[in-house]
Image (cartoon, rainbow, N blue to C red; front, side):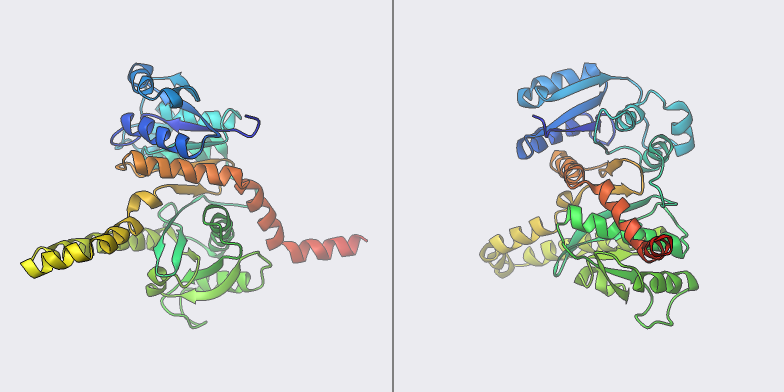
Length: 349
């Protein structure tokens, strides 16, 4: 097909690779028949798995390597010694134009380091950021940074805001996403100097998204904004706290419904609604964190996910490619500097 998309897969990355990768790709291929795959990994392990998935095998090219970046490997070591690893070769495929995006469930730090070295940064962006989306009371939102940058200045936060609103438009389909800076209060004088400076810049920016100002921690789950912007330290803590609370309340719910015969009867009566709740909060549906700011589309799957979750990460990668994510970021950064560019153009004319 002329409009087919090739996605490069690190077939050996993740706790349950390569079985999880192959089965996840098979699920994604059914949902997205225009996708083709470049699967990088140990052919001796991949070939039998692909033989069980003839439809997937028909749209997959294998690239053999026995080298793997381990989950405990330091990013610097992976960058120096992992030149023939499945992760490195999968990323190289994007840099060489063989694939439009890459998906890996491997070592996050190594993936970030190798991708930044191979693909470089987009013009106007100083640091990459990790973002993903999650369920809220009002639908779905995304948050960044989730751990790539522990300390950020005002310009970093502004760049995150631009990349986040483009992600919300492409991955979540929100036409005019709202943007909020995570702070300790909503008043203008609250927070450190960097976040107040970032807010001042965003208030004067001409972007497709709408900057609403500061938000607080309880606004994240409420879905008060579509894009939550913060530094990587705060974002990672917030993400892990939310994941822990979901597990806590799931445990409470299970204990409550098993506490008595009446409670078990109540569970049977509410089984359909509880199943809908489980699906709504299933982390596999939200698997697929984007490494934003790179000159290439890189999606990080959770290392412990299953085939369903890996398929979700592939779908995120396909959506970003189909919606020309990188071009949209370039356009929005031009809008960020639009006032200066317009003034220069007027002066020339």
